[in-house]
Length: 452
Image 1 (cartoon, rainbow, N blue to C red):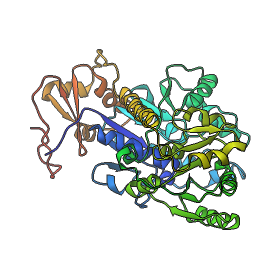
Image 2: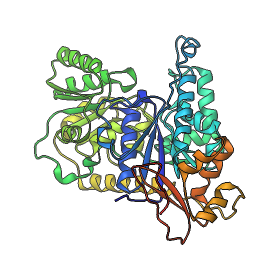
Image 3: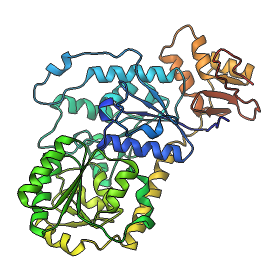
């Protein structure tokens, strides 16, 4: 039997981000939140989703929209030889995937994860009629001064300008990020602290922590920004074993080499997620994350649920995790790791993490509750709704002679319209007059009678 819910979410994520780290982990946590709350969620991408196992569990629960025809534009790669440029191809494919999804559904919330996705959403004006939430995943996008920015200067300007648009809500992962965003955008209410949900929800089950734990954990790739050399040096000084959880074989080989050179006992895990990753993190006796900069620090958040987690006081991002991590200076790291190794997670830390999770979920839920619009525009959609009491989104769109931006606005507004109930299922979106008893009748035959 089809279950109908009242809220539908669009999650825009690039194909290249369907990996076991960063944005991919963030998107996994959004999917878990939405499905656990009974919402319907669609993934909209610029290309076919990577089949790497990360999202296998969602195949029967989530629609996956990508463009029917993939645009390939290689000239953009030549615009800047040393820094990432604005990816026109990515933006256009996001837009085309988005249009395909909008032909089938309206959305109560749109979450974008890269600047090109936000460009696709705002270029058709969807942010004017639908709540758009943009997580500021990269520091320069959030207005944080970067000594070694991965983006070309003009691209940073474009992304920051998109973040400054009215009606675009910024999901600042911490108060540190929020302060930077507010300083360069001048926004107040639109710069909201939306703390990331832990990607593996099983880590919230503190009753499953083992009695014996081993190794100092590091979560992330081998790259300068993560500062893995400092991790290796701290383990060498402390005489403790290491556990590296990395996204690729390339990083695994680098960690293996460095562990052996330093004479450190070690374990390395590549591309783990779900229950497997949860069990590995539960087995850690401590964790150390010396990253130079992090907008949200998912690795630190994950390990804090299972073991004492140490961060560096030298870097501002670390201090926003002080409620559940230990923040110390560089010269105190080795002694701190030795003293905390194997001591477990305190009851106060567990309580802080539970409260943090509940607040993060409540904040996300708040974006789904938008003020209802009492003014109804005269157009063919409402005429049909008044006549039939129930309108099937996709059928109505297919009956239109064209699908221009104006038609998107008509249906995008419907879920915020006073007197209109929006019914979402994985298979379809329907609208009915509030108080009407008419129910959708979905059938495998798409050409059969749609209204019951």
